[in-house]
Image (cartoon, rainbow, N blue to C red; front, side):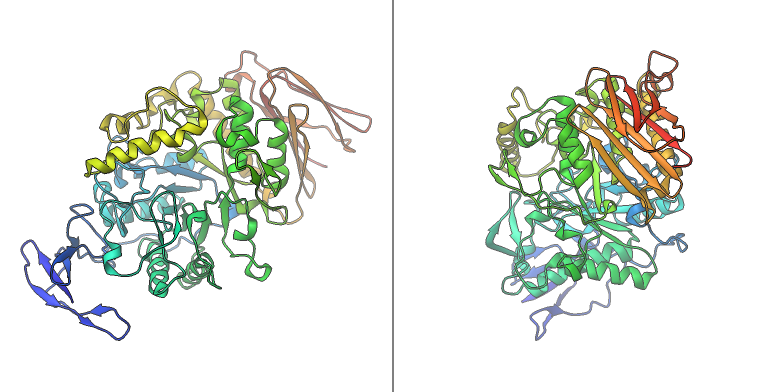
Length: 589
């Protein structure tokens, strides 16, 4: 038996009728916008609506009726973005500003667009317990976080982003639900004990009664695309989604999102996070793929991080040399079926056939910063020159670049892991779990308490440093690199463009882009000593320097860069300063 019970001023009760398909349905004529209610199951258990659009009192409180069509959108002309147009900026709403709200994010959108960002990626906003959380503990997948501003606040943010010519990608979690406030199991067979995830019960995508579960998740994806005008979804950790049915849930979801985009006359994207190094995610269904638009590539991050920091613990054991970085440029993944020292087995598969714009790469993100014991950003781990080199490696890559909030000016405040669970036992379990996670990296010492409000407060951005010496030059470099990427867009996207990758073994890497009558040469020295490089090349036209990271413009101690290039018989000879990147252009190639 299922009843719907009004909360607050409306205290009416209505019994719902059981349909032949096992669902319960009914109409409540007196319900109005703003009405709060619970479902009462079997006469005893009061539960929030599993498809609640708003949880104004948190994960345990009543659900609220909202008007999904009442917002006055102003983005009728917005048509979305293609993968090749993306420059992504990942942000956490709670720590991106002091106010920690959707509306406060709006104040910074035009600045991001001016920097060269084309889309913001918002960490998960499904209602989570308390007011402090990364978002991956969401318990109400349809309800935007009430402390951020609820559904109307999110709509205002998306509309403002589109007005600023920015796309919006929303991070969603379909591999588990958060442990606190998760009442979904009371409504049906939403979980299974056939599989295990590191974060909680696995969702039932292929067992008995899974058709309804799949519809719940696919409808959620369409909900964000339709009611909130979101341009794309980033699916969290799809290696934790288990489905052995003939039509994988990821393929079904992607088809539905694309079809809805067609109906709305907007481009809609599905991008997955996966640590499997498997390009089947982004291959077309006709080639036995799942048809997603993109996937994250952790190998790119791991290769650069290990090379510049010298860290080799944990999963960095499989990386560390400039050769690994060059492999990431050449082959999408570093681990492509070879032996992984960290996993103690073979890992990955070749992915050269998948277009470069199917892969999202980064040198920082919420995981790679926040899952460190003390949340250090790259600016706290490497030298000033290495920070600039890192920016060039990312923004001159053939892939879709992602910046983590604050990275553009070298933010040094940490991004720590934080929660605000109401259950003391759960908070203790989180503390102990974090300590176990860090064991493989050998991180020791005091670990900030995730439950402590100070841990959250320390993670807020400090934009006041962006004008300080060093930070201002990092920001200027990001601006110039993104402007270069924009002006030379065809070198990344033209059908006949080509990319040649040289080097690796000597501590240096060369990327040569060619398209029609234009060429771009990016040289990187990952070593702390100057390098002389000889490249095979039949070009006879001069190469003009576009920028070099050791120049005075970017905080170098000389007016002109020490980088040099000259044409010799059969090749190009270049001198690369230590820990430096230099970019050259040829007008006729």
